[in-house]
Image 1: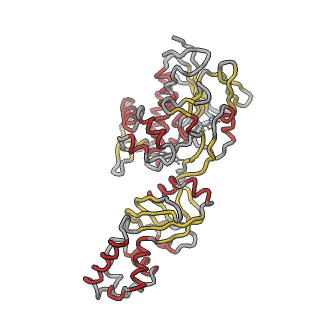
Image 2 (image 1 turned 60 degrees about the vertical axis):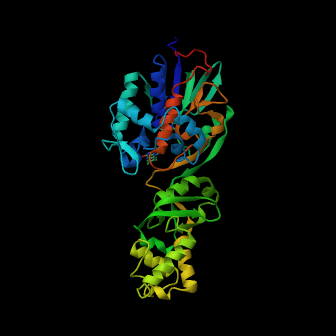
Image 3 (image 1 turned 90 degrees about the vertical axis):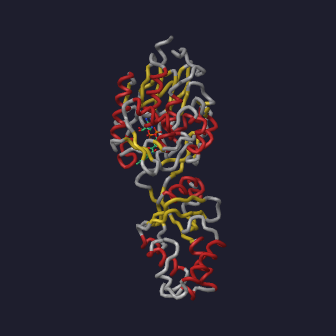
Length: 416
Ligand SMILES: Cc1cc2nc3c(=O)[nH]c(=O)nc-3n(C[C@H](O)[C@H](O)[C@H](O)COP(=O)(O)OP(=O)(O)OC[C@H]3O[C@@H](n4cnc5c(N)ncnc54)[C@H](O)[C@@H]3O)c2cc1C
């Protein structure tokens, strides 16, 4: 047993605290110190989920859970074998935090306050003897004489193990040190955003929700379904956010200038719709098209789509023939909108990119290039859609990294 294992956790956010607590639990005699660059820890946890912190998602099948991550699907599936959504619920329950599942399967603390999660982490860290050193930005890391040397301002910090959890980085410069160890950095781009449509009149219908719709990005295979919300700047809602996450890289390459095709009737196919409309025409021939809206869309949206199909809302159903009929079918199933730019979703942004996953063993979260160096959280090229998935990735990878297996090389042996 050695009492001198020295574990440095870089970053005092969600993954950093989870990793530090896990490290101290797996290695009670180790010295675990969190180095945080700012004068505030857990800042994102505080503002998360609108101040309520959506801690995880009620999805208890690891394979299904991993599908909510546009980047990291296969790797996280491996990580979830060790720590998944149920583990999160159990972890908090064991520490006196009751969680509650909402109808959309998002899980929040019953207190409805992110402060509950922060209090829990700070209490646990203190109880276990994890030290937190704020205002200590770590700007460089290298390995020398069998130990890590962390550079912070004028200070040099020595450690046997490093768990690096600095979150999503908009710039790669802060990760240059990792390249020297052989890691590849995937260019960061934003994920989770809504679509700006400055030239589309549909914005006048702001507030309308269609549940569910299917949205595709023109000329790609990208598509997502779910509730779609029309906003005063364009489109938002789960379908759009999902599309922005799965398309984060392609949409960035297109400079956020692209077109989407909306199927307002979700997955309805053209032949079925044509039959539906023929039936509507037979049974409602003399009714005004504005008075008989057969698909349950809001009447404002229905009238908008009818007019977009160059049909008067005062026309009778029997008059919808030929070109007009075809146009209506096309508008309902393939309604095209030009997107020019993006808007952050409720300030909740996530970064796609970071430390490339091929350089990290997800069974241990250890670097494949440098034993003793571990990664967790959003600094990895891992990100999920909204719904508690990003924190789940932080908890899973943080917990595993904190196990700090004995394969890691260092000058002292682990106290396992
Ligand atoms: C407004 C908002 C709301 C969100 N809501 C949710 C939600 O409800 N549910 C969900 O699942 N996800 C949510 N997310 C995403 C989630 O917050 C992140 O995915 C998660 O915080 C990532 O954890 P992390 O520990 O990897 O990074 P962070 O939480 O960002 O922590 C990184 C820490 O490292 C510190 N740091 C950075 N560089 C250095 C350095 N060089 N040296 C020392 N310290 C450093 C930072 O100051 C920070 O404290 C939200 C994000 C935002 C922005």
